[in-house]
Image (cartoon, rainbow, N blue to C red; front, side, top):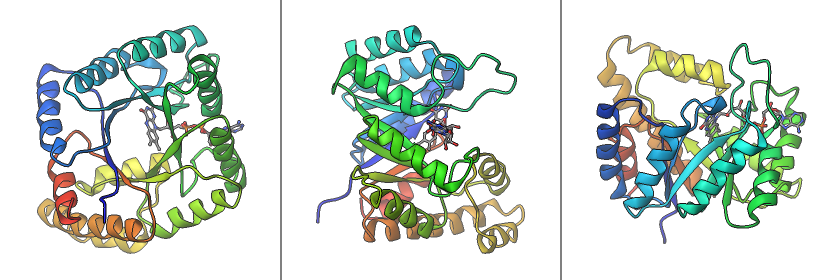
Length: 276
Ligand SMILES: Cc1cc2nc3c(=O)[nH]c(=O)nc-3n(C[C@H](O)[C@H](O)[C@H](O)COP(=O)(O)OP(=O)(O)OC[C@H]3O[C@@H](n4cnc5c(N)ncnc54)[C@H](O)[C@@H]3O)c2cc1C
């Protein structure tokens, strides 16, 4: 059986030490032969140079790099310029997002939603870019309703997305239900589960509250019961996330996208345990 495609996500570092650490992380993860490495983008372009430099470096090392591109607060001209520069550097894949609206932002710019960015990329560059969009198996936290969010997702796909990466989840059923729902509405693109390793419980709880990813009650209580014993949290997290990854793959997920948080350790262990 051929191994499913995998990809790894980083955020751009802000310091020279962070950049070195990231290089090292990338070197370790390259052994798993990912389809691509992606690099996040701060809403409103706050990490634009960091994202650009990181993807160009990844590309120059001979890997496929995919910049994330969030459109909120941007003009068509700035997005067009960035796309042209990516194309000139041989980038073929973009993760196209609306981005989180920074608090206090008054001018949301010339794009309101990700579907408008996807349509713009297609309009400007035809099929040059392979476009990935975000999917939310437990629904986006600002969605007016589950139904509205499903419709918005289908809208992004119809605007020209080639594939989707999900927000992380710990309920595999939410993922399968989401896939069934959108497939019944005509979506045929691959919807790749985003996999988040469990390393630090309080950080994960805070983050999950913000992005609307549910930590099931049993899992929350189990993790809380380890208290400050971070080694036990990590060991339990590795078992749980490996099992979750194995389950989604064995039930038909087309690949895995790992949120690495710029560290190779947990993700490498999960990949090794999965036999990659
Ligand atoms: C894989 C992945 C990678 C990410 N990378 C980054 C990153 O690099 N940088 C970053 O800032 N954030 C990133 N995010 C977070 C993301 O930017 C936020 O979740 C953001 O709030 C929504 O972005 P989106 O592209 O999903 O938006 P959209 O698809 O535009 O959806 C946003 C909200 O608007 C609603 N909506 C969408 N279209 C319409 C419409 N036409 N009419 C009415 N309502 C609509 C949706 O239901 C949803 O509630 C990432 C998320 C994922 C899952």
